[in-house]
Image (cartoon, rainbow over all chains, first blue to last red; front, side, top):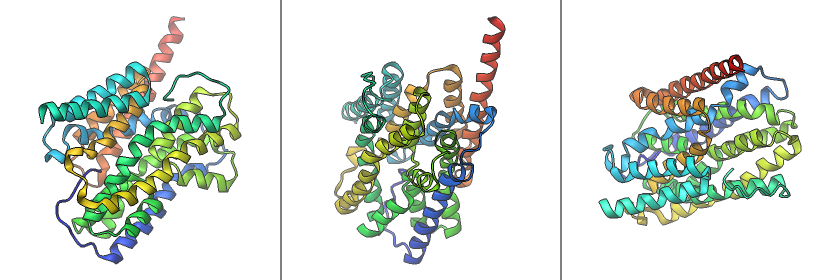
Length: 117
Length: 242
């Protein structure tokens, strides 16, 4: 997600538009899969129980490698980013407030980058 | 979810806007970074904006863009980016018990606007306000979307315009990890939630070598199984003790 390429490459326009359109349709299909097709039919309790863990099961895994092996530092663990991640979690768990967690996380990132950089 | 002002007089729509505001801080850098990366990959402003409007999923957009720059075959680009978006199907399933009664066109609109932030807000709010009817749930969802999605499009345009003039020292790459951690941390309210989050991280890193982001899929499914199983065990134990 943060894979910044240094080369200014040339992407074939046909490829680009094929990807934009098909990826858009496919993403909509995934988002519509249950809301659209299941609709108001009741889902069994065991399904609902698993769905309660959707966000905590997906989001941490999604950003794990960006936290531990950031592309911006060439995949090498970066103390500043690790400190920022730990601060964000600590503030989020204690205050239960998303905004404070973001502000604290960003603040600690810039402070750590300044002090350690 | 974010503020605990505790005013019950505020409408669900207003509550949605209020809960979404913290994410504005994040959506802007995230969108700007996408615009910048798109420009570096040779896309013009119109192409970058269309990408964000049609796909409206940052992580998948970055994945697709990076693979196209690397000259990956189109089929592989699509499979990889869609694998990143598989979590949207899980979000869709989780939203269905709440908004499944809405007419088809409204469900289609919600499907389009199902993103990490809107799902995270709705998931928390719907579990908290069990008295809400369909109408209130839909209004809340609309409230969350209003400050976030238009800014996603706008930020993409700004990034594409600004191009490569934004310095690396701003560390915009870390806006996304910080947001997602900030969303997840308050949700770590029980042992099963914490266990699920831990399994997700460990398995995602362990299986990071797998192609097409399959590692994330394995990690997410295992984490959901662990969370649900642990909840069941703890409930049974609490029931036996009572």
